[in-house]
Length: 306
Image (cartoon, rainbow, N blue to C red; front, top):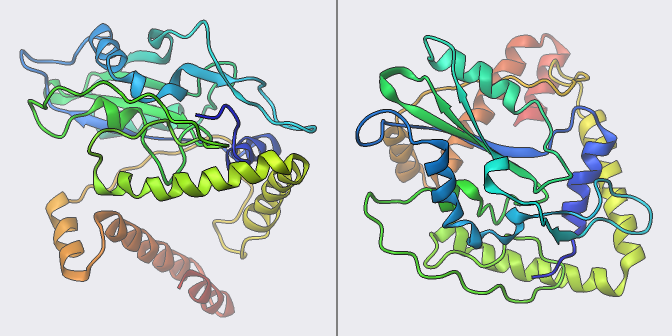
């Protein structure tokens, strides 16, 4: 596994440096029923579970060689000699009554803060205080560590698909790859979306070879891509009520729908559950823009959101 960041990974770091409102941490919140005996696991139990599986994610014990990109080089992945899982796993208790409103308020603050670039770029929090003995975890990983194609991250290896899973075979040693930053070896017998990432890994390897042969060109391309995204996507987006300057403060909201309903729609219309969710979000965005707009702006917003 190469220690070099890809041009795309470096771009995610560049974006944060160029725009205060760009937070490149991705993750999610998962809510669980009480463990046998009631309540939540301890932080030590969570860390032990994670520690037994973290060899599947070798990047999670590595940090950037430099906290900033720029000049004629970008950071590399280097082993963090001070790495301890406990430093990346926190513990909080929600204020009473610990319902959805309290959970969303806490998550909004959690995702409003950038990850510390002097350490491996991930963190997790064990959340207690939910009704009926339930508990939750929230995790955050920098986009340069886990990209949107591979997305084999800490939440995937921490959870099992069945109550009594078969014993996991030892992780395969990572195979050398030029310029790749997908998270090392894929899990044995991965689900289909993860298997598709193999082709993405091949594409990343080819890009890494080009970066090795043409380093200056690749560095300039990374910076140019970051500037292009900021200029043409973040600043020059179509004029709407949503396209206004923002800071780093985030809001976190939840829409509850039965999973069976989403699966039924995906079977009837084709596509995945993710496709159904994206279609619903797109429809909601279009309706909101139309409702806020008037006259010619309404027509322009309708065209933009189709």
